[in-house]
Image (cartoon, rainbow, N blue to C red; front, side, top):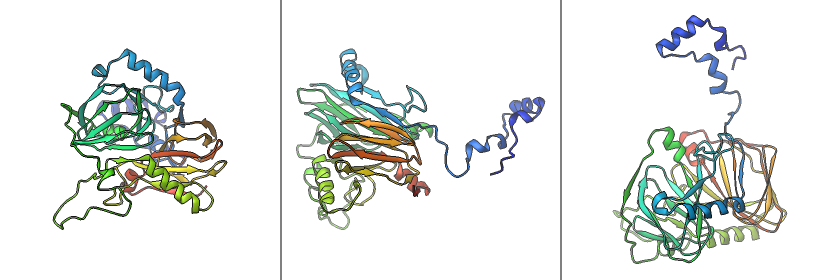
Length: 346
């Protein structure tokens, strides 16, 4: 792109005033920012949120605000590049930590953005999605796709906390974000699909040819199976991190239209240097300790911490205290649909 692009200040003031009066603006002074040379220049900055700092604030929120007044009691993890209060961790991914106390019920609603949650701590919590009761265990991935009714409840004795991931920034940008409310759902009297229809990998329920399937047949991905799959690969794999993608068991596609989820295992002392990716990412530590360098900035992390990386970030992970497990939330599915997802060698 030409380096001789004119600036707005080079134009006569009367011409600038006339353009303002006509409701138009010149493109050429803005071209460098709109179409930078070679790679994007993201506003997103690497972010890091220590769970031990956020947890007390979340528990105090439980004391200060009953769930009836909050509907969803959440602390938002704001992108440092946009400042505290920004409703996004990256350009397209919203992340929040949500609290539910024993005996509480969060009312049913549905919304246009899709959501998923990674369970961080606590027992006895559950989500009901379209009548299917999904128990919450540490590390589980639970889906609430756009347009699906969902509510939460807590039958245990200790606080339950989970990490919410939504494509909310995308829907807000498109001015298509809205929600509807409804009474609590009556769960069906049976285990969820992860314990029945999709209990074993490679096996699907037999159906008649004309029988259709739900677009989201499996709403919960138990962490115990995810970790077992990672360990099995690590036992026979080569050097480098082991990864598995969460997919729709019927189609093999990503679990949500615009967000993907990838689980990763690092052996003790192991280093992982992924390629430069056009997708942005949020990493949640399920278990373990280590450090990650993102575009030259180092983050020392521990269990339940969360950090983010902008597009085309240079990332290096290292486990420093035994095995480490993390889940990466990313917008690769959205970029793939738009036809521009890209990876570059370091």
